[in-house]
Amino acid sequence: MPMTTVHRVFNFSAGPAVMPVPVLEQIQRDMLALPGAGMSILEISHRSKAFEAILAEAEADIRTLANVPASYRVLFLQGGASLQFSMVPMNLLGPGAVADYIDSGSWADKAIKEAKKVGAVNIAATTKGDRYARVPDQSELQLTPGAAYVHMTSNNTIEGTQFSRLPEVGAAPLVSDTSSEMFSRPIEVARHGLIYAGAQKNMGPAGLTVVIIREDLLERSTSRGPTLPTMLNYAVHAENRSLYNTPPCFSVYALGLVMKWIAAQGGLSAMATLNERKAAKLYAEIDRTGFYRGTAEASSRSRMNVTFRLASEALEKMFVSESEAAGFDGLQGHRAVGGIRASIYNAFPEAGIDALVAFMRSFEQSHG
Ligand code: PMP
Image (cartoon, rainbow, N blue to C red):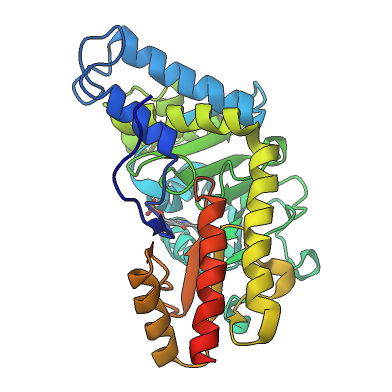
């Protein structure tokens, strides 16, 4: 097995994000020719047997890992999670119906803006007034009887908050944007109508969106077929097994390798245990003295995106530049909120967490 001799920084980017090194090594090994194919994944026809097998295996591995019931379809789409902000209402929200949205962060807000262009939206709860420092409680939800669906954002990438359990939404299909946490912990697929996520955080490279949809919801897409653009129709993609048009072949292949890597780590429960431990180490350091201030309320803290502030923006700037000199990358908070954000997805190594904790401590000693 070739050794990685190049220097790699600790990459705290929110996405595209760090990939598992064994996956990168395999991509490198197979780059000139996929075993048995005599050509690379960048050159192969999406209609070839070899690629169809790669796609089918990626789907099968997703099904096994996430325990996806047979009544759900797994789709590989493009356009990012952002296109799902439009596709979800275009497919699932009919005339005269209302969709409930839980507004728990900046990405939820974007989803709401797109849905409003398509149909009637009820904000079932919002924590905007708390600067999205927490996710709404069950008791705050004002759900619409007979809603077309309820939309939530399970992990709020920018604000660093996460639902620790799924809201109870009654009979309405729960639609969840899980972009920044899919496959970082077990998923209760059967409690959802639809789950979507861009691949570029926990699952692979950019260019691919995974959608898991309950089969009965496809009827809504089919009934809108005459007016819905073909490429935006879930039923079309389901019927064509994600091969209606050319899929992002490389991203599907790389996602497949990441699924095998997750399985080799012990699956989603093992990932969750590791991710909890990684996040707990960082939060313990944040809470140790008060020099660092976590921005999320403790009960809503994300295991994926750890957000905190220092006493001043000047000090935060210094923190980021000294961290870069020390071999860390991507610690600057999202441009909309500032501060510091450490994104620590599945492939982020625990050694990088320990190194950041040591850096935080020494930064505090010299600037505290
Ligand atoms: N939803 C969430 C929760 C996200 O974190 C992001 C990207 N950071 C998006 C949606 C948008 O995803 P994309 O860039 O794939 O469109």
